[in-house]
Image (cartoon, rainbow, N blue to C red; front, side, top):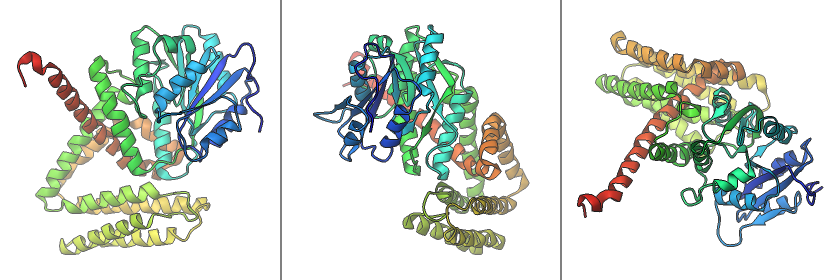
Length: 453
């Protein structure tokens, strides 16, 4: 395998810096993307952060510039800082080990800085076609792509998954904050805040797109969005007293979060009032389980972990039992159909695109019919506010759902709705938690001054 072709040149324009920790499943494709670049004036630096899966050996087959962690795991912030210190290029181009850049990505970065000397940093987005074909990875990737593509070109923050910055500016700013962010978090966002506070300009280049190879799981999504992103970002916003109206923090998204919380509180009220609170909750859990696994890249169309599949059957049987005891016999029909769809989908090859569309549509219709039957058992006076709130949320996010319909179809957009609503819910919860932590930290800081022991 050829090494990076430009090592040893007198002048290097771009230094590609990639932090790596146990990325054996994606690193080879990532590095192939770099060396396939149409730009030759670059160096490739891989910072191996104590990998134990052979990532270091893969990296050494592509470049001699492999920096290794000799003591303890550094974390991506410090790993990137270390790569930046060793870099010779005028521009630092940070990419993650699970992304694949396009052949013109380095040239796009180079031309951006050459054509716009007023910009100190630039970042892009994921493209529309992630490496993993399961629903959750498609949803998360398209979500990210939409947010970045709809943002203003004048950025208020930074993104290190595919972001470049002038090396002298990066070093002047002290790099990423390794004290606050020793593990993957919002170290790139925080750097963006410091850049903007220092009068630096950040450009969001909509043409700079990379392919994301990560396969998302539901628990991984929650952990990343809440623990690694939302809560630390809340603390940063409150500390800096800077709430930008861009990316994930637009006014429409803040209003959507409040509406989703109000919707859940209202649904809880009418469900408990009508003594039917358990059934919609169980049905929503089935939605999350099945939609999360729809299109998983197994040998079959719906190849679930046996524990997830068993839990799905238990939940569906519980709904059937409740339907019988609560005298809602019509509810049994879509649930039986749903079980049959699951069993059929387990026998269909994953590669069959036509059947994948049919099965996805039938699963979505089963849920729509099920919720429709439940709503039919409530008074119109109770249900009308529900539809009004949902319509308000849809109107605030019309472009988002229109984008999903255009890229993946109506059934995909409908399946994405509970996850999008859930995103708004836990984002607001995370903001409240972050606010509580901020208040507690400030209280502890000033306790001696106000007489607390």
